[in-house]
Length: 164
Image (cartoon, rainbow, N blue to C red; front, side, top):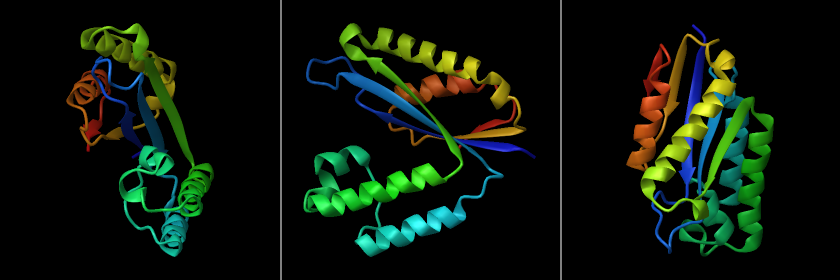
């Protein structure tokens, strides 16, 4: 059985308040289950352990020296960043990121429509690729309920899709 794993994460806040983020982004990472990444994952974990960081990585916080990273100097943060960067370059995955500029969106309903439209467009552009798989499993942490609803409504048209 040919299986595609899709990992989804968002950046920015969904609302349209004046103190919110200017951009809202959704990134999709596509990993074909048959492509083994365990060796590279083991190397990444070993590298992070040597650096002295074995927790989850949040890139925005890492770059902006917030959260778990506020006590780390620039050298340690660069080492963590470089470890993730090198790992990402070596593994056989595909990425797609969708960005909505919220400066041109004055309410959540329009933002939802724009996001749905862009995700639908991305799926249509890659539909031949998606249809190669017997099973598609999407992983999303439901960090933002609106995005979860959009993903459910769009991706459920694929046979064999399950949400992890």
